[in-house]
Image (cartoon, rainbow, N blue to C red; front, side, top):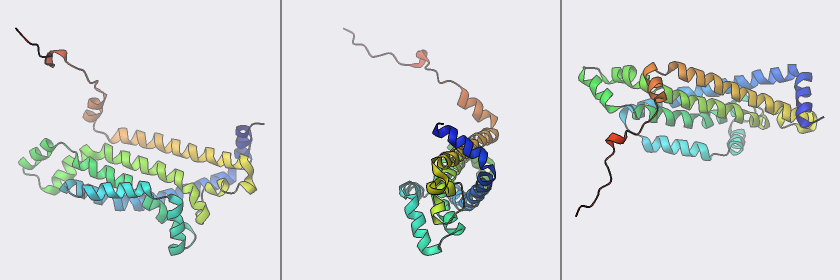
Length: 235
């Protein structure tokens, strides 16, 4: 039987174990994402509203991409010990950069004409943020959340080496579960990531204002009448 067939058989034979680990995996992901959201979104949104801190947002994003996950978890073991807390903190650090950067870019990139028009109508800075900037920036903000969720789901597997309970418990223990178990648990992680992608893509579309959806679907046409002809030289 092929490895994929053995993996599917492993999933069928160990449904209870995989379900338990999936729940733990989602608990770890949810805790990390919840704390990451509380940290990243307020900072990114406020800096974008002030049009300041681009260096900070970009630097945090670059550092987050450069940090090796295993090195971060290993450092956490020395400070926080082995267990759920260490795994969650490591995932929070990895989840914050894409959400913070997208939140900053989304708010900072809102059409300035719309913002100035709102100010001209007498709106306060807070009203401009909540009634103009945030509604227009939500799709891009949500895209950052979607990226972070998928990143955390896939990275949570390696937290098993530091005591975090997840589907990684099977993946890192090939001696016990053999290759079929490793592949079977990996399929479950991939399925979780795919479901998260579909769910958050749907939510992102749902919160996108209808006008923006229509505009994004509109094909870009090159109007030949508006293109200046190449210059010619007359005698």
